[in-house]
Length: 160
Image (cartoon, rainbow, N blue to C red; front, side):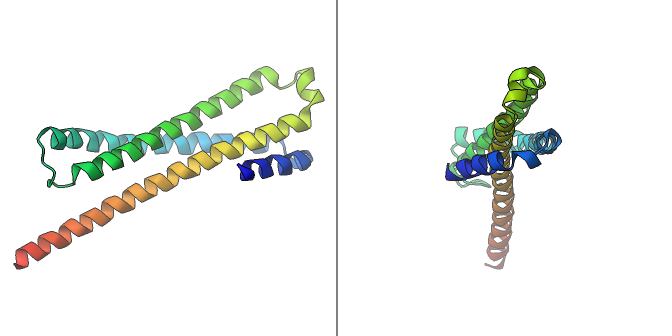
């Protein structure tokens, strides 16, 4: 919260250096990254969901992955999808508001305020998207670690 307040104050005082193109460039990148993460995580969910349901229904807790661990992973992936969707909605709302507000007398009279608001809004969306990126990275690292553990366990079993 303090970080958002700090960015708001900084963007208010530096509003003269901020252009509409700066903010729209950030929004464009956010839209692209959010769409990519949405798709990647959607594939993960499409892969894990049927497997998880099968494991829970068949009570195969010791199957390829522990179903409780899979449920936590699924929860994390669904949260990532939801947050990426919120970022996409945020980008759409930004452009919709720009459509209605930009060029109006109210906008021109309060230009510094709107610049501060736009930069703060973009910053919040960037923070949400960074969280999503790290969540995807952690999920992938966790998956690779589990694969190595399984390979190591299989190797140990074959030696015994």
